[in-house]
Image 1 (tube, rainbow, N blue to C red):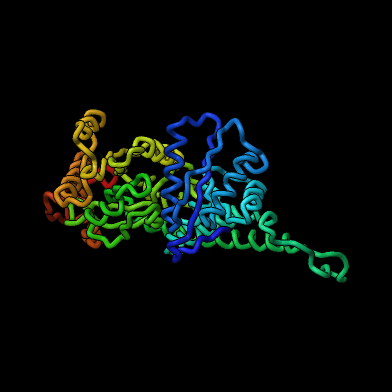
Image 2 (image 1 turned 60 degrees about the horizontal axis):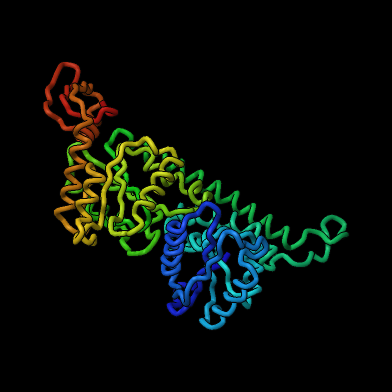
Length: 416
């Protein structure tokens, strides 16, 4: 797997963009811009104009045609670039042929770039295991093209005859074994997570979802007072954090911060992080955070909707929040135009305390609208459940009977 040194700020890269069949000019340009942002996240300095390859001239062996390969090789040599980032899914042989044409420069397709970013930002045991498993699955078919596994072992197994297991086969078997170990580890972690989610089942839960770098973690800090990482970079958050709304609401409302999405997110990554994204699937409300200042925010909004549908959360109620509204130029009435198109959305900046307070009140109002009034009778032998009732409900009245305590409450529908 390609690894770019994260401590070298002077490393340079060149970009290659491939326009696939059915990809319009706008989508093509936006995808290229995003690849540049991914490069920046890796600490790479992009040099020169991107090399672009149109869909009608794709070379199946190396993606770029002969002329484009020569143009790319010249750019790599003149710029001193050490990495070539390709906005296209490459086969192992295509990556190897491009590398050979450019003096053995490191070639990374979009999937490899995203996986490298995930590798750097994974900190918890679960995130590290998830990312490692996906990276190993990506690496396995590329061993031969990377020059690994050449030659055979000198002796075979029983009796010592024959070439034995090749080094390539040995490497692949080690990868399969490691993936199996990681799968077992993630299964055990998922059992722990299911237990934790079961304890929160009757509580009101809101999950912050959206495109990467939309400002979810900043909102999480403002709403809960938690110390989650806030950074102006892609995929700063890979672990789900769950905290109670602060100041406390009655009933208690839990807010979770989730991993951000991106277009063309590798399918294996979506599958691997499904357990992490279960917080979104099981939430009572999805707070869909969008960076309103990004020129491509409508495409990002669409991508998030598609991923939510893919993980089965397409029908969960949601609240649209257009964040970073302070960065939106309003000379031409941009904010008014947004409000006219999405009249039910909240328009705010996560950096303004008043806006955070408005979002907090909105969350309280949404959950209050779904509460029902009822009576709960608790036997004296089960008074340990008082704390659970006071945490999940608004207690309107408490009275004592011969066989227990009767609480008149307003409670979430599921709890009641």
